[in-house]
Length: 68
Image (tube, rainbow, N blue to C red; front, side, top):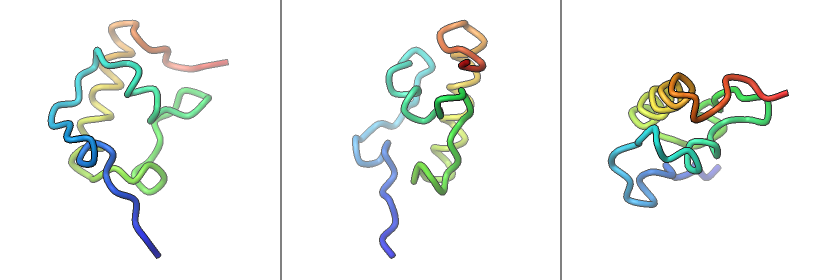
C-alpha cells in the first residue's frame, strides 16, 4: 500500500497562507468541510496549519463556511 506524499512538501511550500484561496479550496470538500489527513495525504503538522489557514480565510470572508 503506497502512502500519498504531503502536497506541501512535494511543492516545497513551507508557509500556508490564508490568502492563497486557490490552494486551500483543494482541501475542502464540495460541502465546505475540511478534508481529513487520511484522505488528503497531508502530514500532521501541515494539516494543523492548513486547518488554521482555512479557518482564517473563512473569518476574513475569502472562503465560505458552507456551500449549498
